[in-house]
Amino acid sequence: TTIMAGAGGNAILRGSIAWILQIRTLADALPSILQPIATSGKMSFVFFLGGHVVFLLLWLPFWLLAFVVSEWGVYSLAILTVFMVGRAVIRLIAFPGSSYRVSGEIEKEFA
Image 1 (cartoon, rainbow, N blue to C red):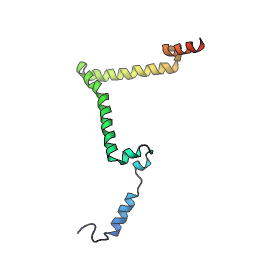
Image 2: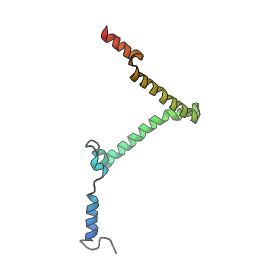
Image 3: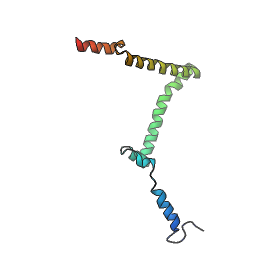
Image 4: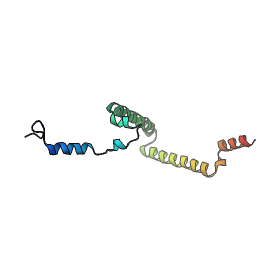
């Protein structure tokens, strides 16, 4: 037997499908600027490929660096970079005058 027997089909099945189609999804809650991306297959594919290109461009330097230093060297350099950038940002927030650029701007303003 088929699920949709006859011209009218099964009323319970049609009602269940209609109820399921009314359930709100994550795509319905997206901001209006993102809805065309979620609802259009072509746009989704373009953004999917773009995301992969960005990922590959971010990954490529680490892959090339792994030929110079080992895999553990790449991990160590990544952790060291995060530490040094974080330290510089915290120093800039805590002591703005310690930056030559900020102190130069302050001197220009009061000169």
